[in-house]
Structure formats: structure tokens, C-alpha cells
Amino acid sequence: MRTKNLFFAFIFSLFALAASAHTDDTIFPRASLANDAALGAEVSYFGYCPCFRWKIRVELAGGEIETRELLISSEALFQFMQTENTQWHAREAQLFRIGAIEALVKGAHVGIGFSGVTLGQDADAGYTNIIKTGVYLLINIFRTEAARLDLKTGYEFDQYSVNAAPTTTRNITSQAIAFRWNTTRFFGKITGSVFLDAENYSRFNVSHIGYTASAAAGVKFFNVRDFYMGAELQASYSHDPFRFDLGLDPNLAVAGIFIDVGYEPIFRKKK
Amino acid sequence: MSACNAHNFYAEVKDVCSYTEQGQVVFGSTPPLPSIHADCKAALEAILPYDSTWSMAPAGLKDYTTQAFQALIAYPLELPPDNKLFGMSPFSIPQSFLDFFHAEPNPNQAAFNHALNVIQTISYDPSFNNVAVAQWTPYNSVAFWNGQLSVSASFGGYTRTNGVYFTTPVLNAAILVHEAHHGDGYFHFECPTTHDFGCEADLNGPYGHEISYLISVLHGSGNARPNGQPPILSDTDVLVIGFQACSALKRIFDLPADLANFRDMANCGALDAGYFILAEGLTR
Image (cartoon, rainbow over all chains, first blue to last red; front, side):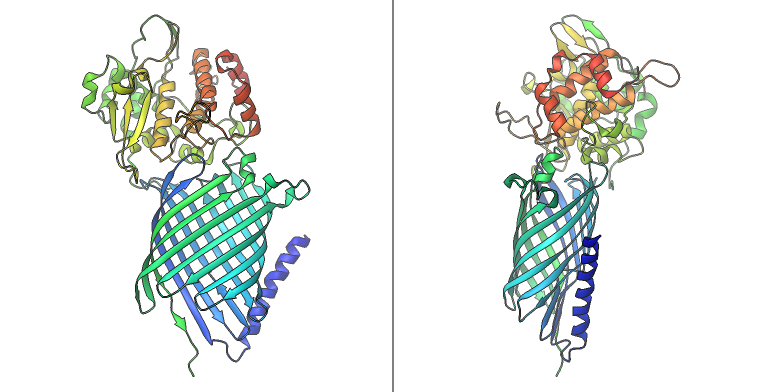
């Protein structure tokens, strides 16, 4: 119950921060919008492959709103991902993610974030009825027009069925680092995190620690009037000890190549 | 689960191929002849993509192969209670098999159509007669569009040990399920002790699907029928199905604790039909 109250208090404070921005005279000194769709091919290792998959990804309503004090940003308020087997005979994963957003107090270099609500299924991983959400505190190490580096410490709530079993619930704390860049020609992201299930706090063992790492790098071939087309390479690896207890391989690795199309207008307040 | 561009082969043959026969023990130096019914054989051979290599195949091997596809159609399948395997580890049947099982209105239709939608050619290949029973290979090693099922002479012999044959067609059907799962892009990797490429990390791979299929056959066809008729599967069938599933489990590393213990401790050849009947909770 206390956790739920804390969660709603955090959400309310996020909206309060956003509301305070609306009263600022320089409400739109700068804003940008990011919409992106990608189609590509992935190869993944879930302990039994390599599995080859086609992947569709759509990310809408991302971008930034920046005032004198605050930077509110989102990779995408709406994200959709679906993978299919190579013959398009079976959907392997379908995930929706809504509401991922973060707010940074620029002067203090600290902020808060909400990782959105993720719903869906991932047959390759063995998961159905997925519900995931989380919040985090972030420390901005540096930030420029083109790049930023953040440290994040957060809490994540996961719920899913594994192999159609009754739902499993996990409460996870994590420490993460994220480096992102986006220029007129190049874009990408490198992240890493370590995490621990709350149930393992009292019986801590190094083998209970999970970790992830990911990297993405892309280039925009055509960039005309805020529209672009490009290509992107992605790779990720995760080790989740939770899966071992279920007889699933704890190591998941994915790599893919994608064709991206996007629309990223920048808005500035006219003088 | 979506299914785009998947053909319903099952509908073309189910009416003449939906029969079952109890497996028997046959003593002798040569395998018994396959018992596929003539009308089913004709219907299946019209749609199974056999190539010209079958002119070199040993007598009866093509019929054994056709009979394996007939078994996919005919032997009822049912998931065990709580999706247990060998009566232990609830919900250990993998999500990938459950999705495959429920992909069409009935699981036999799903199994048969899935096999034929990933197998574009069925070949006889004598080069691995003493090496492997069957093999699925992709035509395109990048995207795995289309694949070839190669069958060796070992496929047709029924299970044999020391002059004893066990006529259980569903065993070869389980091999088809295994090979068809390779057509989904799942492959084996190196075993740490033997260093052959015949192991898997968890139950999501072809051996896992083979085991899940065999256990589903036990529950779909191994119980006494409501009309008072005996079970579709004989005790001989239960014995060899259990043995094959137990043997396949030995090739999988990451398992839930109870299954891992069973894998390590079980002597598959020493388990009789009564063990599997009791473990699976079958009503005979």
C-alpha cells in the first residue's frame, strides 16, 4: 500500500512540474518532436537459437520541451514493437509502451522519470500477459544539443505469465547508465544496468544480480525538411537470474539491422 | 498468434487419415512393414513434397515417412494438467510450444500444417543413414525461407533393440515435430561433454517441442475413452513414447529443478510403461 501511495505521489509531482512550466513566460523557447518507424531483421539468442525474426517498430510523440529551468523529454510517448518469424507465419512478440517521460531540472542536473506502462507478450522469452512499469531518479552528467549522459536509479514493477503459468510479480531495483546522441546525420544510444529482485535483498548473493547492456547506432541517409530515412544497427544482451529458476536460459542476446523513417520537427518561439 | 500465408493442408487429408492403431512389439531381424491405409497414402502423397531421390530409397521407407505425417493428423493431443512434463514441474511446457499448439482450431491441425508450411522438399539422403534419423536444412541460410527435410533409412525402422521392433508411428511423428521446429529457426548447439551438436539450452528448442508433443500424445491418446473402448495407445506405445521423451530430456541443460533432477537420475531404459502411466496420471 505504501509503495502504491509513493508511486501516485511521484506521478502527481511530475504533472505538477509540467504544470509549473506552463506558467513560464518562455514556455516554448525550444521544442522538438520525434516520430520514428523502423522495419528490420533481428537474430536473437534465447538459449536455443539463433532465431531470425522480422521486427516492426513504431515510436510516436517523442521529443523535448525545454524551458529556462526544465527539460521534459521522452523517447516516445507511444511505442509499438512486433516480431514475426521469418515466414511471417507466427507473431513472436508484440509490445505496447505508453507514457515514458522524464523531467530534468537543468540547473541541478537531477530529475525524475517514468518508464511508461508496457503491455504485451513475448513468446521467444516465454512471457505472456506482460505488465511493466517503473520510476527512476536521474542524474545528468552532461548534456549538449547533440548528446547527453545520465545515471539512473529506479524501481520497476513487472508482472507476467511464464509458459502460461499463473502470473508472476517482480519488484526490481536497478542502477543504470545511458548515453544518447542525435545529430543531423547520426543517432544512437548506449546503455547498461544492473538490477536485483527485491525478494533477494535478504539473501543477497552475487549470482542473484542481473545485468543488461545495449548499443544502437544509426545514420540518416536522407534528411529533408525534418523528414529522414536511415539505417540503424542494434545489439543488446541481458542476464536475468530469475529465468534460471524457471528452467529458462538466463542469457538473452539480440542483434538487428533496421531501416528507419522519421519526422523530427523543431519548434522555436518566434520573437 | 497470426498466421499469414499458411496453407491448410490438414483439411485436404483429415477425412481419410484420421485413424489410429495400437503399437505392438514385433520380434524379428527385419522391421515390420508400414501399415498406412491406401486411401490415406494416396491423399498424403498428393500433397507431400517428395523429390526424385526417393527412387533410391529402401523399400517401405517412403511409406514409413508418409505414415509419420498420418500420425501427426490422427493421434489426439492434449496438454497435461498444469502443463507438467513427466508429472512434475508445473508450467514447464514452453510458451513457444503452447503458441504452436493453439495456433489452429485443433492441435493436430496445427502440428500437421506447421510441418508442411516449413518443409518445402522431402528427400531421402543415404549419406547419414547411420548418423541421424532426419534433418531439416534451410535453403536460405540467412532468412530461412523454405527448407528441406532429409530422411535417412533409420527413420523407417521403428524403434528397435536387439531384434525387437516397437511399431509406434507417433515416434516418427515426434521427429517431424522436432525437425519442423528447426524450420522456425531453432537449432542445436554443442554438448559440453560429447561435443556433438545435439544439445539445447532449454525446452524451447526442437527437443523441448518433441518432448512436449510426446507428453501431449500420452494425455490425448493414452487415457481410456469415454465410450468404454481401451486407450488409443497400448502399453507398448506408452513405454516407447516415455523412453523417447526421457532420452530427449537428457540433451537439455536449463530445466526447472525437478526436471533437472529427473534428467540426471533417470535411467530411461529401466522405466516401464507403468512408471509413465503413474507419473502422467493416465487412466487406463
